Figure 1 (cartoon, each protein chain N blue to C red):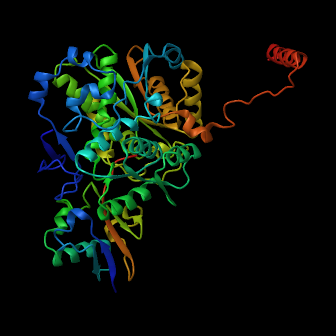
Figure 2 (cartoon, rainbow over the protein chains, first blue to last red):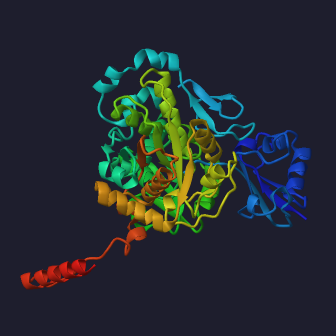
Figure 3 (cartoon, rainbow over the protein chains, first blue to last red):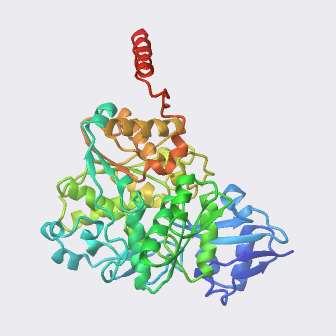
Amino acid sequence: MAAKVRIPTPLRKLTNNEELVEVNAGTVGAAIAELQSRYPGIQERLLDDTGAVRRFVNVYVNEEDIRFLENQQTPIKDGDEVSIIPAIAGG
Amino acid sequence: MKALKCRECGRAYPLAATHVCEFDFGPLEVVYDYDRIKQSLNHSDIHSRPQTMWRYRELLPVAGDPTVGFEVGFTPLIKADHLAQQLGVRELWVKNDAVNYPTLSFKDRVVSVALSRARELGFNTVACASTGNLANSVAANAAAAGLKAYVFIPADLEQGKVVNSLVYGAEVIGIKGHYDEVNRLCAEIAGKYGWAFVNVNMRPYYAEGSKSLGFEIIEQLGWRVPQHTVVPMASGSLLTKIQKSYQEFVKLGLAAESRYHIHGAQATGCAPISTAQKAGLDFFKPVKPNTIAKSLAIGTPADGFYALRVMRETGGSAEDVSDDEVRDGIRLLAECEGIFAETAGGVTVGVAKKLIASGKIPANDSVVLCITGNGLKTLDAVVGHVGRTRDIKPSLREFESLLDAETRSTAQA
């Protein structure tokens, strides 16, 4: 099973400039843990001290915000795409 | 300008085209040397300069002279006595950015800063994600400045806002989705192409342009901070920058320190910030927008957290209004003051009415309403709701019988 995680520009220094990373995890939370095991330091960029997704980080599974799904428990499966995107100003 | 700084952790960054902290994704903000500005900026300096937003240029983030949007800003501040009477408040002012130059919304302020700074940083192509007004302003100002523009908008926007971007020759991309989806896509595009995205990688500079609205309010009131300011909220950025403008003028001695309240206005069909404020929360829950106030239809407001903090700090309130109340607000402002605002203006008037009625804005206080966009761009929202024409033949007899019939029906009523 492999889903893809799209890494935002500010984090690519940690992923050796990899933009798209494959993960085998079954949930968003597990995917973040898997990224951490491969790219140490990435987890603390995404999660705060309590383990919640940081205030200015938006995570999407197949273009849907995980806050409309099951947050970090949101399941991911083969072929899904997870995007990590900083919050953006209005327009 | 001294540097960029993360609003969350305080880490400093160089003054480049970058918008989030690499460590915690916190937004970056421009840092100024206020001690130096204090020595060089006073009332008579400002008075001696042209009546545009650039008369406060020390507090706007460009390194050299501005090169885009010299004529932007210094829109009228109108004493709105008829509307004050209707709403039941002593003193009411309307800051009318519906007539801002050149594209009739407050966005010309942020765009002139963003594009001037983009040029300083060497960009030739500019872009934005927009609910309409920003797209109009980027398209127009880029055309005048000889820059290439890509603007990304939800595909279902009001025709007025679409045409108002196309006419300037910008590349207009309609995205089949709501603004939050346009935004997400633009974040990905901005990471990939080396363009100046005014509300993505240029955001620290862009957002500062909104302060000029607050500076002008203070100057036009005779260097006084209004007791109450009602501000429409989409991402919440404008509301936070109004507070910053008041704080900066007080800090620099340009306005006396006084108690003020900043209130936020949303449409009920997209009210994540207002809902959180009313529930006493310091965080918001994203929503899927469904409102005629499309310029405010941002379900995941990037500055929502800070907007909530500003309202808490200043003792302000938030409120939201239905689509019908938005139309009523547009009509009330038009009939009382002769100002035709877009839907966001209807939201602001409707919310002010509620806050005054509930006593959250006391009847004896003074209030400024921020009207940020022009009604001619959102005709779709009010067509069929503002009366109709009575068509007659070019005959005096027909006109007189029309008047007679109407006088009789008024007398009967």
